[in-house]
Length: 225
Image (cartoon, rainbow, N blue to C red; front, side, top):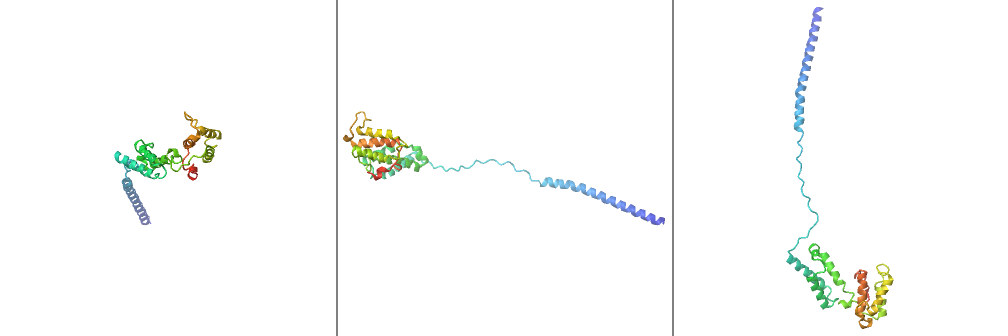
């Protein structure tokens, strides 16, 4: 009986020793593994990227390449010549030549516009030639010929019908027609009958400029010469 008990005690002690050894091994294993894991985590974290230098943004606007001054001026003159050719059959040749020479030498349209936008420049130059077309006394070959005073008044009322009440009141408009009768706006008034074309065009020109008309929005003269 004592042998059995002694054997049991020895067996229990062996189990206890074995468990203690396992526990120590486990603790030792954990103590060695944890630092390794920490080291691996520390080494696996990538280093932050260095700050990037900001690069200048590319300009999206297109800038036209500037020509040398002499070449640019020559191109501008050629552009004016080309516009002038469009009006050879609508503006008197002498007047047309004077207009071209004036615009090439002392331009009404800023040369800087030609350097930045040639199409816009040509459009403005063309508008100068267009502005002469309604008036024969200014060199136009297609403007209306002056009728008698009474018919001239009727013509002008029809020509500026869309402006009356919007850009000029009717009373002021009629006063311009009265001025035309004797051209009393001049220092030495001249009766309409003495120079009807000049009086007719002077009255129309004043109204044209006052109402800021163009040949596009006031085309009456094109169909009523």
